[in-house]
Image (tube, rainbow, N blue to C red):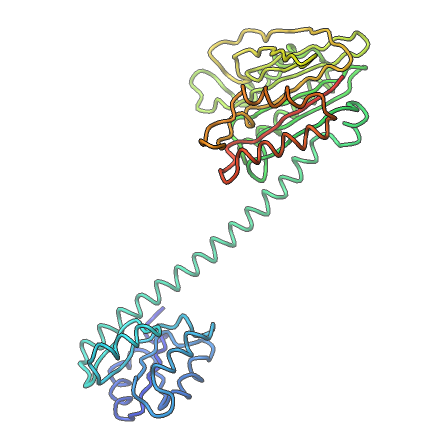
Length: 391
């Protein structure tokens, strides 16, 4: 903004003072008001002045009253005000600052001092206006980005199994799914293949947008491996998923990108009465007769790692009424409680043992409340996924 595009409102009941000020500030665009009422009218015009020099002692509305009204009006509240006063007592000056003035000059005018104070306040005003424009631009960009991420959430949710499919294939189940951000790095994927039900609970590297992108990769690759190629053995699925992910992301020992996922895959064969599973870092829990059994996971990520040994295949006979739990680490990693500690696996297992006998939807409510009560005012640290199934 150039000097001749800046507008300064000069308010004084003395025409001589207005002439002196107008001449001194002619490089700007001075406009004048002979009283407080006219000053309020001119200040409310569009665009408003960039600065107001306001005499304190005037008939009718004095400068203090004018400044109060300026600051009460949203259209004029942000205009900086410099008081003009012939009084040098601190009480009057303090009163001016209390009603919103940012500086003052005294009569008779010291022109170099006047110019210096005006220049300083104009510079501050222009910088503030520039910051406000930048903030509005950033807010608009942030809103656009947020809208895009919210739409990505719709796409991500659309890729998850539908509730009617879940109810048909897992009559007694619950899924606690709590993304940390708008989109999630955790995902679940369930498919019926040749009378076998494949259940996946996965935790992709990171959360938010990076994790969500990896989850879309994971879902696409699982669809190809299981749905297209008809692979149902969990260990074979993990081996194929790892090799596909490494190849797609061009991962090797020197790669900066070592992203992948921790995952538990269960294949339920109701005809044979057997549950097969394989897991990378995330174990599987079974509860029967008030006893919890922890089936371990291989400590190898689904990505490039120190070893590329095949994942371990497990086959578990089950009985009617057995409860199985698949989960990611978001629940146990949450800080909170009386000492701001993590929930950890011991409390997590106790929670499951105390409630596994309840209907699955009742369990869902209890576990959600437990998590939120533990978290209280703490930030959620990670995506949360917990799947419970009663066979």
